[in-house]
Image 1: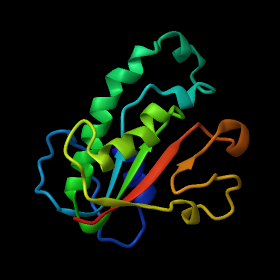
Image 2 (image 1 turned 60 degrees about the vertical axis):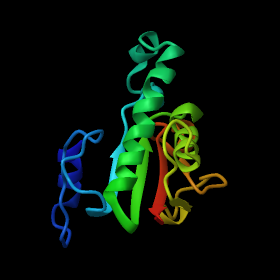
Image 3 (image 1 turned 30 degrees about the horizontal axis):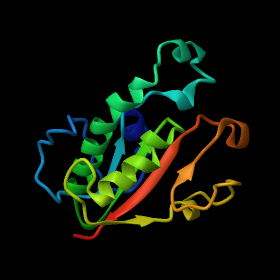
Image 4 (image 1 turned 120 degrees about the vertical axis):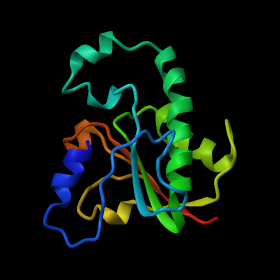
Length: 159
């Protein structure tokens, strides 16, 4: 994924840096970045149209296994952003337990310390994409958007 991001940024004016590391034990200091993208591991339920065999490998309890890791990665991503910095939380799952519930848990301090951040409306960043819902987060759907069921929440660190 880091290579894909680096390739997508190639030719864009910098400065920027793409880093691949263990987000649960970051090797950088807190508040080191203006922008952080955390693309969390998930059940992959949003990619079933491309990987239909995955439906036979998943069990309901898989959701419970990913939730603590997803919350931990989002907390560390927010700690890694400077005050005023923005964190993008992305996953290829449409399941609320891997999407909105993770963001709400982190913001409310469930399962760990509360993080001081505000939810940013991500919809204006995708002009021309129809049916993005009520926001502030975005859930893309295969039948509406012609893509995997991807999720994005943007959070601005406030403290």
